[in-house]
Length: 101
Image (tube, rainbow, N blue to C red; front, top):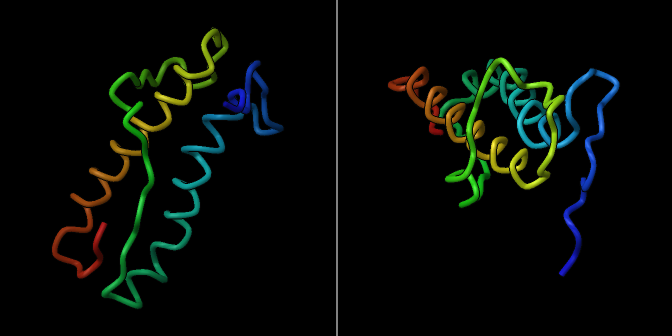
């Protein structure tokens, strides 16, 4: 079995923990940047990938920089929960627009 890809805390040039930025902030930003075009070409679909590990995630807005980074899999789990929460909120906001999340 391959070792988890980010065994130590790595900070991006933007100041975020690498796993958090890669797994959540990147897709969040891309989705929001494309939202206008998706709405203009309705009906459209937005698909978000997550993991069963979201069950172990917790989202605490006061610690998104993960300065207390200890367990890589916890950060991964947190990002997958953040993906699900974002997707649910996006679906709520797009309800009735013809866009499917």
